[in-house]
Amino acid sequence: MFVTDADGTVMGRRAEFDQYRNFRAQINKLRGTYGAKWVVCTGRSLGGYKRIFHPMKVFGIVPDFVISRHAYIYECRKWGFLPHWIWNFRILWLQWKDEMVVRRALPKLRKAVLSCNPFARVAYSTRVRLCFRFEDEGATAYGAEIVRDAVRPHRYLQVFQTSNEVDVRVIPFTKGLAVTELARHLGIPNPQILVVGDGHNDISMMTMTPPCHAACPANAASEVLETVHQAGGHIAKEASLGGVMEILEAYEAGRINSDLPVDWVGYDRPGHMAKPTRGHQGGIFSLILIALVIYSTLLVVSYFCGVPGRQRILAPYFKMIELITGKPVNKAPVAPGASK
Image 1: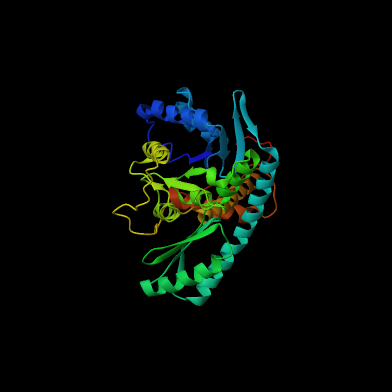
Image 2 (image 1 turned 90 degrees about the vertical axis):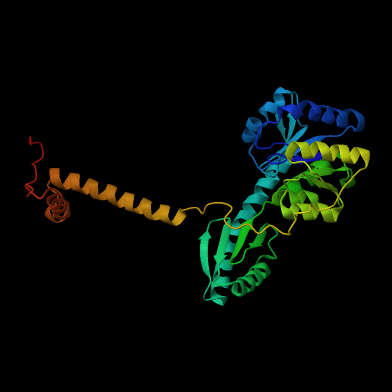
């Protein structure tokens, strides 16, 4: 079984039409010579997969199975996609349960770090990400140690450290579970599986038990490069699809190269890889908008209807109009049914 990630692995930043025919020939050779199954494992939805893989489909390049949203298994048929129903329902329950755990774990982690270090502050926080900022490198190292101890029981939380920040992010681990389930369903042992990926969410596929063969293109993240290096897999010199084709040729010819790139510096230490969400500010804006709608409704009802205490409701409105125009406002309300 040949398992590949989608974005950054078989799909680069642009459609590499000049390589599609050679890649199609390689896939067909794997199927004809070894009876291999090609599996695309992506974090995209099934609809997102259809959209980005349409150029390959035009060239007749279609996988045997698709794993969408890191976990949901579909078999590719001529008429469409056949879901692996029992597994898909099971993984839906598993993901919901883990999401509930994450929602409880991150607030507890936030409280634990801030209580131990009064100089730490939260740079930003979302439902799946929490970033702390410290005053110096010493405080950052101390905070990172606390964070790593706290997240150790949670396999889906990963810690990244910069000079003055500690970033905790949810890294999907279900790709490995889905590949293991599909291999069990097809009766393929792990030593006959080759996994190729470039991102942190692909590591769970590369570290399955028993071990499989792992490889990565040149554009892979540093942790992925180290994982492949330790597993004795092939680290390609080409990026994206070119790297995937190089990997297939290397395994067929027995020329596997596990050497790390010359410019490899160790673990990734990303800072702000994504803009923080504005959930708190958005909530305040929504409350202000609701309050304005309610007040406007009261203004209209008070002005045109005989509501008790309407003068108190209308007073701020009339005062604002007078300040803007500099002229007095006729405050006599219009009687219901009367013409203005």
